[in-house]
Amino acid sequence: MAKMTTCTCGAEFNSDGVCPSCGKQRSRSAGYRILHGTLCCIAALFLLLCMTTTAFVRHQLRYKRLTNALRSEIKLSDVNIPGEGKNVAEYIRTEYVNDDAVLTEDCAEAVDCMEIPGFVADKLGIWGDLLRGDSDTVMQVSADEVIGLLESHEAQLYRSCMLVIDDSDKVELRQNLEGPLASLNKTFQSLYGSPALRALARFRVSGWRYVLDVILLALLLWRWAVVRRNSGKDAASALSAMGKTILIPSTVTFVLCAVFGIGAMFAKDGVVGLLPVWKAIRMPYWLSAMLGISAGCVLLIIYQLLLQRSLRPARQRPVKATPSRGGSAAASAAEKHCIYCGKRIPAEAEFCIYCGKRLTPAAPEAAAAVPDVPAETVPEPFIPGTDDLSGSDLPEG
Image 1: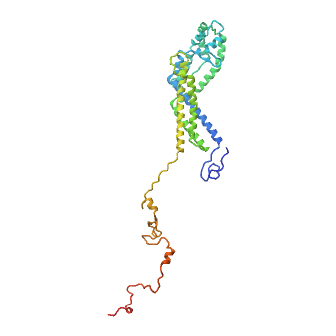
Image 2: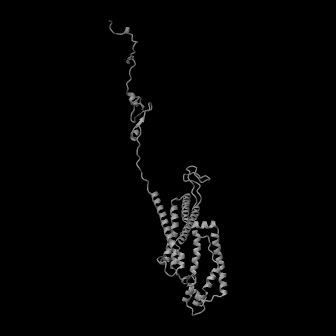
Image 3: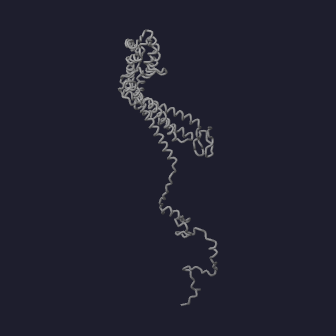
């Protein structure tokens, strides 16, 4: 879509894109609307993700349900390994145990006795204390800690599933863990290593973060409306676009939580297994999804109300005549001003009732009907004090 060079009134736009005749702003192209609308959509999704992450972390810091679930009697051996089609116990039985007398149940007992979930819960507890402001210790995980956890249960592993951990296995495990753990430790150190970074991290999980996100969403909505208006579209349609941007991912999140986590939703916190962990993880996403669906529906409803209001025909209100000093509006319309004295007289009057002068020219027929009076028949005017009694016809004496 090319840029418009001529306004709807017929005048040419100037270099600033303003019509010099009517002052109308030139509409932007469709590419401008698509580009900036896409950027607004991505920014709205990013803010929605930030709000959801804040809700998840705040929920875990407040209720500690994830750490409590990890410390409870869960079964790590039941966790399915992605891409393998086996759980942890079956994977260890087929990959690391060569004795046919060892059963899968024995491997599951050995895995569960290592208390790996408790080790993870302790690390999450350190991270939570830092975010709450109870401690400034940055969470770090080293390969020596993992190998030490394995060595402390080495005898139990041999009794349960005849699994022997020799030095070569420890060296291989160290080599596999050093790279990922070094990256993890470096990330945590870069995020929480200084007091300023820790203060920023605590702000990100505070209630003021919600206030900031809401303000940014409002500014983004205003920007979206400006983009729509500059491209010749209805500015109120930005409400509909923002509502759909929030509603669609929130609905998808709600459906995923309902499909894959409906069993964990109604599980008790003390049940044995991984259901308490999944419940603790999914609970904040349930709440965020419901809140996002509600906010999206509210924006769509507001847009529909504005749309119906704009399409509703305007009511014609009767104009009330304001009384004037000379009378009502009808009386004012039935009067006119004398062209000689300026006073109000009836509109149909031919003579002024105040000065007596004719306001309309006399008709030709009326002028012709007036008879001519001879000059000799017109008596001379009587002027007192100038009468000549000598020549009068009055009798003497």
